[in-house]
Length: 76
Image 1 (cartoon, rainbow, N blue to C red):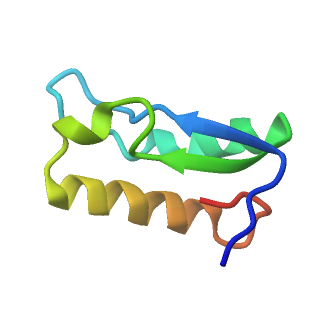
Image 2: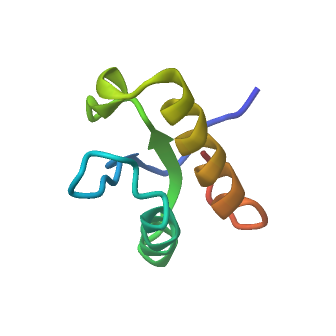
């Protein structure tokens, strides 16, 4: 079981102007969090976007965050 400690950021889900996911922004978000002492990114839930995403989009978003955070102190 993961123990959550420290700062937790509710990550904004990035979109393109056409409403599609902008997964390229996740790397910048993660870098920003790490540079500012955030230890945990809460993805796809607390800011409300997840309710407007299809299941495949939620999976893609979580997978991108996991990929970007791998090997860093940032927990997702």
